[in-house]
Amino acid sequence: MKGWRDVQLWDSFQHSGFVGKAVLFILLAFSFISWAIIAIVAIRFSQVGKASRQFLDTFRRSRRLSEAKSASSDTSHSPLVGLFRAGYAEIEDQVELSGGTNQIRSIESVERSLQRATRLEATRLTKNLQFLATTAAATPFIGLFGTVWGIMGAFRNIGTTGSASIVAVAPGISEALINTAAGLFAAIPALMAYNYFVSRVRESRGEMDDFSLEFLNLTDRNFVRRA
Image 1 (cartoon, one colour):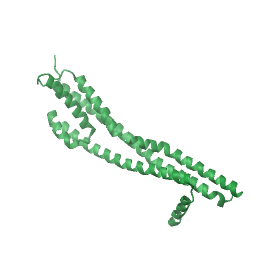
Image 2 (cartoon, helix red, strand yellow):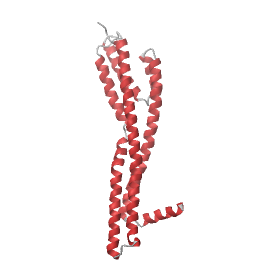
Image 3 (spheres, one colour):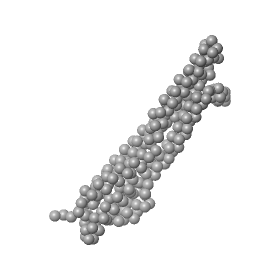
Image 4 (cartoon, one colour):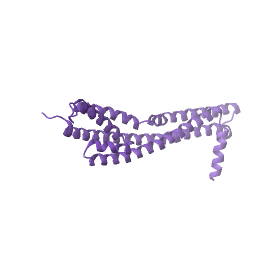
């Protein structure tokens, strides 16, 4: 029975017009690219989660920031490493300007460096997600266009043959339904993946905010001059 269905689908595709085939190829291209992006982004977040846990453990066990810096190269996938390097670089610059007194004059500058790094890391995490959003939003309408075109073809066949029998309308209706299914096949996984990854980005953004506060507290205790 499965082979029969496959043959029926292939026959329906073969009898589709140029527009129907073009719509189907476009939808399949969207689906293929979106699945590739889903795999890439899933791997990215897996690496990010593992690296962030390792870096946080190292950071909290380190007695000095220099110790955490030396270990950061092994966990470079983590966005927290980007924040740490930005804040550490600002601290180094201020310590150098202070004449090597191991003190900084402006913790606000460190905070601004962390904020800039947070925006950059968040942008890096959301890379390619826009295509998933576009796929989820556009492919149902592309499929709908193919559906309408197929139904129009069915009505043309009715007008040409003067008959509303199933033989006359079947090719157009089949073309319409295939494009409808293809549009949903492309849109639904892209939408689910996009929502999931956006929630992961929010979680990572919360981790970055928490780490920034932790880094600023450590900086305040060890580098800020007291009156």
